[in-house]
Length: 395
Image (tube, rainbow, N blue to C red; front, side):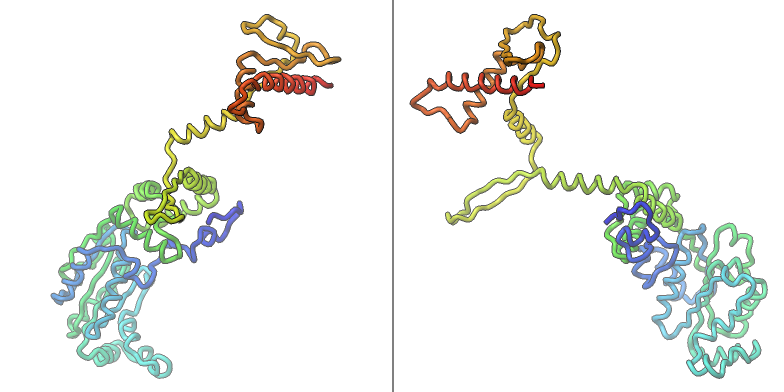
């Protein structure tokens, strides 16, 4: 429901959402929000089945690389034989201790809280400690925005192969940054994935999943045509589309409330333009079957004409210029003691229409046996016109 306030801060609540469905965040459970990228999922699955060492996922900013890597991390957690670690190198631009990041998830509560071996051991000791903790497990190192890795960390990753560690590395980057980086030194790219932009149907599904998760329905508050325009404006980029959807939703709430109210009004009018018909039930009892359908234009026009028939016309002359001769003969009734120039005028045609209406609508309807009451109706009409003229001309 649209809020009627002209100043709204909590726009999400005003639109009926429990939060911001268009936020630039990765919501969990991730599988509920990730649209179907079947080909990309199959490539990643094949990479781990084949035990490849190194793979790169490239794609322009905002196309969904982080979402795919987070999905991969979530899937790897389901298998005890592999230890998956996700790192975002953009967050740790200066230096991230990759070795500690690999060890901490393997520590017990007592080790994390009290002994804290990862803070006391040297690098060589930590590596031996890591191997012991891993046992037969392999390590999947997933590095987002990998072009931000320092040279030191890059050299460390290359050295892990020499230590006999079961290691698989997947990195993500933009095409331009990947070309400038030293990431190819890790190994031959066995993944070779270029993440494409979403189709409109996939983008629509992404928006719908988010809206549904936050208490909305479908792609509300957008129509499909409006969402298509936003999709084209975003150049098919999912991240940019979410940003535009957020701005457009707020704009609709503040500046386009009238449009939503108009849509609701049109829906209400459509529901009123219905016709009902009654039909006796087959078993012959008093129950009736009611059929409802939308009234046709012809029926609506007929209803308007019926309403107009209930009206009759009386013309009033308010100026002295009306003394000019008229084409039709007119009968004027002057009130006694009234000013000149003010009079009620009715011609023969109007008079006859009034007689017909009074004879058909008056409680004193004609009896079949007496048709001579027409004269009485005429006199009643004249009296009515005279009374109206006198009442009108009184100062």
